[in-house]
Image (cartoon, rainbow, N blue to C red; front, side, top):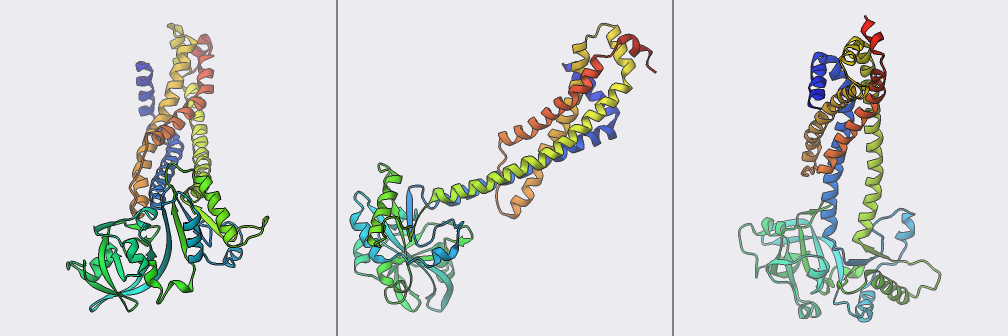
Length: 402
């Protein structure tokens, strides 16, 4: 086999331009596959990391579903989720320790002469750190007593602290949210961005302290974290039953609320990427087929050009299998060179769009093996007929060939 590969390499070097043009189709096909596979895998890693912030065992009762594939206006006309429904769920859900109302508003936040516009104000309760997968990195979270008594306390995001306080210690200071004073009792851990939303530019407060200016005018969301020992689907059905009863929805009518969870987004995203993978195989497959046709054509020319050589080899003892294996090795070598160069180019070129999206490249061994495996397979298939044609040559007639 070493001799076969050495001979294949010599043939490749002796016809550089022809060999390069032959491998070009394989190179383009493999490069395409590697680039798109790498980009999609890197995006997948990012998306899964983003979705994990929602919590895999947390469900959310909302007015709208997170994935809308039907008529939007049907969902728009639904009644909003209310605090009364939160109280009903909290009272009737047995064994659930973590249930929180979630109220979101964008408001102006000030400290002395510093002003920060469009800050997300999140009203919640004392168990929201478990529900929302968030915690106070410095200081503390507000207590159940502070929620019940509507105390004006708050926990600040990192960006809010940096822009309002600079290097000053914010704990114990008072900020104003839409003109209302709040005492800073804690600082959130750094969270980064979630699908473009800056998780560090938010202020957490007891939902009860928003009564003066916000939550009466709009609906809320209800977050429910389900303990590991409880069945997720069973709890969802229990929540659905309680909500239908609280809203007096007759049997047979559709729900006028949504129960959302992380899996909905993950499944929807997988459907989209599944289509993308099909497109990858189509584009890459076309390039590889074109490359395979080129290899077959060149190998047939090579067989014709080396007819006398084949006759000499057979005359000195080479068998059909020897000739077959020699030409197959040459075909696989040509396609493998294109495959290897395609893998290298694919990995390097994939870094360009990923760096623009500020994502790290995630090239797996599987992706490399798929790209190279396709090229080797094309080499075998494309070289099989020319190799068989060479192996069937009559040595006497081959020696006479000029």
